[in-house]
Image 1: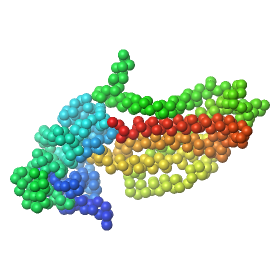
Image 2: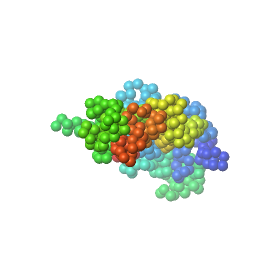
Image 3: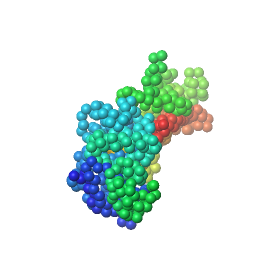
Image 4: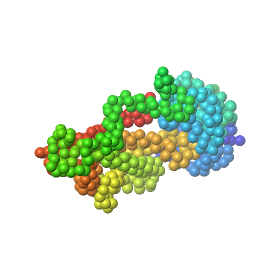
Length: 246
Length: 302
């Protein structure tokens, strides 16, 4: 069964003369339990696709299906229980005045969970942060720790599909590896499906089963990781990208 | 020894409960505020003002309303009248002490009304956008288009003279700048990732505005309010001068200045003493505002 189906997705910003088409006729599917990568240069529309899926960008057309259910324009609350997102910059994605406990507690409360205390403890353990981080504020945490909190928040509603928007690009190389391993472990443990955006082919090669290459808002090629390692891209741009990253 | 451990408990990097974390954050804010000498001076003056207002009947050497026409316009340092007497022979020091109550009353009332209205209008306008934003901001523009005192004058004329109505009128004219600030802050906050993240948890607009946007707007509003207080006290004085604010026997500082204005060349202290009082309190609010800005600015947190 397909976890996510994207069909002729168009996303644009602005109106009439100022209109910018950020994503043009994107079509791809992500199978259940799969890890799918979106790669491309900056401004190629990778992150915009994620934002359109979550409804953060309202100006889109085409069809988005999560588990065969078409997603309506106004996302129902149940949608957010199955689809969650981790943002690129952990320094910007946590409220500066909310402690870790508040961030996770409010998320759990909004999704109607009970026993919030026990769940907060478990979430922190899941992402490898101890109890001592529970009542800290973001400015008392390092970048990697913040991203772990952001991942814990995304995991709180027990989603099936996790959208990862360059989750490691704002971090140090050593911390990147930790976070990527954490994500890989969590995927196994919770049987998650990943849709991961990155401009780093080695990250995608490490994390994903298949990937789509984007250029100027269009998906130019979808291939699997074996083809990535074998450098067997069909489209000239994809080939160029592989050459450049060797 | 016990104090030492309390300090360590408050400064810990690993709080153990919600209350502990809150207290610890408060204490660290207090520490950074305390290191700002000027702000502490401002706070000290304002605390003194509150104490003076509370203890006015004990502190004042004379009744502020009793007239003594035989001893009118006595100079500074006269026996029994340290700050002299005014044109009706009333002790200026006692009037200043009782005037502290009125000043605090004005400050408290305005601080309760104007920023709250401004915050509400500004954040709703900024977060909702679209036609709600247009309507609310055009109303704000209309209020901003009038000179403040003239608009307050119109309000007082409609509501009736008196210090309460004067304060109400000042508040009604003072909220638009707060609305503008709150809206500007909201516009930068609403597109941030942490607001997007909470929207992805299915939070409604009300929760986002009150729980996530307000805490970040309030600090800059508090700073702005303390910096505006001087102007508000002066505006109240101005209305008093025009006969629409504090009514004659009441020892409101602004009204005292306008009374002393007639003798300013020959008996300068009658207008100068309340002027110095207003100056001191305004300065204290400004110093406090500067200090609070350093503490409350979330971007300054290490």
